[in-house]
Length: 86
Image 1 (spheres, rainbow, N blue to C red):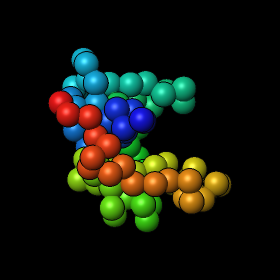
Image 2 (image 1 turned 135 degrees about the vertical axis):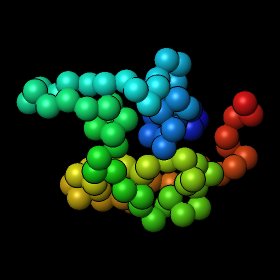
Image 3 (image 1 turned 90 degrees about the horizontal axis):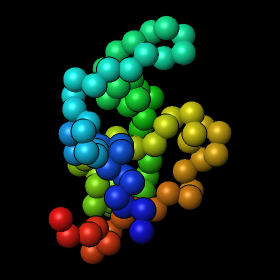
């Protein structure tokens, strides 16, 4: 049911939603700036459930700091049959 939201974590920014491009920029509260795709994808990693996930070739995983704080037990792979046809 949440598989459409997984595309926000895609390796392809153009595939993450309408209007997103590799050239989109962001400025962070500390004043640093960069390409939004590079900035938001820093610190992500795959968890064990990712190995069997239908999105494993496109998804960057979860935030490392989230995994450290809460673990990864709640994450389950999205099965291919659960992915809506495009």
